[in-house]
Length: 68
Image (cartoon, rainbow, N blue to C red; front, side, top):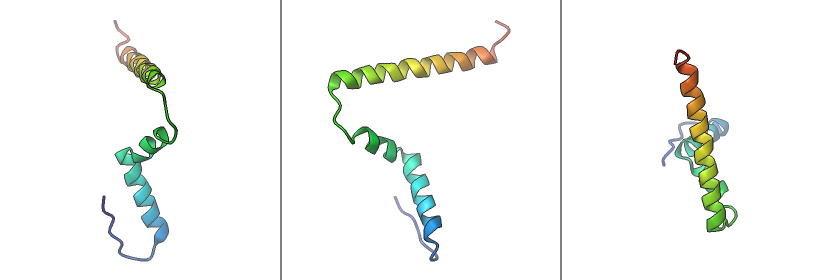
């Protein structure tokens, strides 16, 4: 990752840096790895997240296909 600095605007540079980290998913990964998670808990969380995403996609699909 590379950020070029043209001036002295530190705030702008930090915003760009944070946006790039967010886009890469690095901050989420760091939060997940902050504490140890047992493999069984990790699997349960993965299944829970999968079900949540599936339900959200089903709601969106049903909203778009009201005629069915």
